Picture (tube, rainbow over the protein chains, first blue to last red):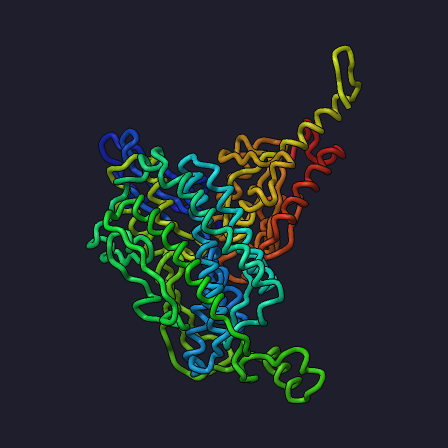
Length: 405
Length: 159
């Protein structure tokens, strides 16, 4: 096993004048994961910041090539581990395009997917808000956020069987219908949500200490955001209302009413406010889905892709054969390539999927929003204090499972 | 039991010390991947690891008793994990949280260390991908039990 640490080469840090080199991370409470930043500081002021990534490189894209199309989704869910359902959603949409199934997905399945994607966005923003609060010394927000997140995880567990990586969304629909009692739990969450958001806004948004820390820190202009390919809340905080759900609608998002929250300041506080507004918009979509959800099939009626229901296996020879074939050799996807993007909690999350006609993906290339957003750090950090760097990292909300993959 | 003025308790110093030590197992603030989020959930109100006295996450390895390897250990991260473990003061314990840390999990590939026990000694393995916070709490319980029984990692024992 090779074990080497990165040497401090002049490309990473150049040592000039009175500057001191400081390595922040990869084990640091405020880097939100295993990020290392090589800092050049003079006193408390940052002269240069060089993010060093790769401490969580998992080889997910390569591993996916050795798994069946359906199995690959398991590792893909583990990329952005704060929003597993968004990853799965994007991958499923891409594979369905290759299979030519896009128009055959039942309405109920499409609605359930939107529901899960929006719930996962709220859960992800809960973690962001809680940890951002901790970075700034506001511990109580963390408790409120994680309490709400638990309610969403309970819903995911009820539907998919696991708290964090439910693997509930599948190519062709969802794995099973929503369980009994799900709607009641969802209603309880929707009832609790407005009050909890009011609490959080009261605790944080109007808090003068928090405003002192966030306002005018890490200002990104529209041009910079575009040059750096920033997407998601970071871009919308500069005033550009780009949202994949609106720009390239997928999975039925054109049927729901929602606003795209934007700000024009481009600072950390603007990114903070955009995310808070997004949580409310997500719950607005969840409410619309909940009100319009009709009974019906939850997966495409094609036993070449979707295993037949368990209860039919003992009764029908064909069902048994299809089940056996899918479980042992997966399904085959016609040759071709496709790029599919969804609006993940952190921005445009895209999968470029290539098939050579086999039962395993030929290539699954990811466009992880966190990685592109993290680039901004290099430009935003110089001139700020070290304490402000913590704020900037928090407001960019990177997830390293996705950055390093 | 109420202890008023004039009352006293008799106990072996060893037992009292172990009781105190087992009730203040402070973990290191080291999050690696998905499991780190469940580790944070364990500190949140629903599970509240503070009931076991382990809510004091220390960012410095010098102040920590317990390393929770929460997630997949990449080849690049392995030397860092090893160094952090070496920097922790004796006695110290390690929980390998989740399938990836314990065995590489689903990531049987070039990038991931196939089990953190190939680089540092592990006391308790927690299965799951990721394990529920209850699983982590149980692991902390097992560590406490080890300490109370005076096994490896007693009052003055070295790791």
